[in-house]
Length: 171
Image 1 (cartoon, rainbow, N blue to C red):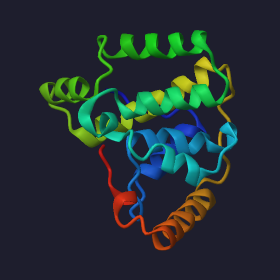
Image 2: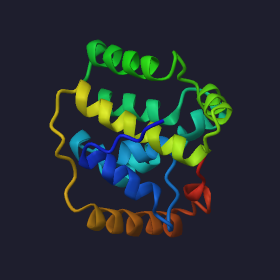
Image 3: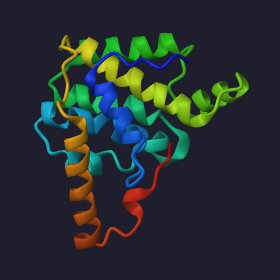
Image 4: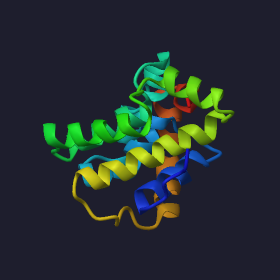
């Protein structure tokens, strides 16, 4: 699968995925870059997506797809945007949207899991921008945002006793 890297949202998502301090699952990697646009804080987006990676941690609907749908909803997208997003995903993946099916097909084609999931994240973020009719101008200064988000997550771990659960990654 070809990775789509067409806008700052996808670039920020890939910065999150390459972070060595915090593990961002596929849903979180789609949600966090859009947090400001959705009117929530990045750490809220991070926590919101915590249990949606890896197909809700049970290989159900792909977390990148779920994350994309959550963003569309928070941006006020309705049925038209939902249908456009899902139609594009179905068409791109032979009708498959379940994590287990997508990963199985990827493996059959000789692909590795991490690059496949990263490509799904980029595709979902790109589609959100497209179906919402938005611009490709996303978050500015991804390095500063990432540093601030990591600081907040570190504080959450220490202050709320979330013990390693924040660092789990399903994808």
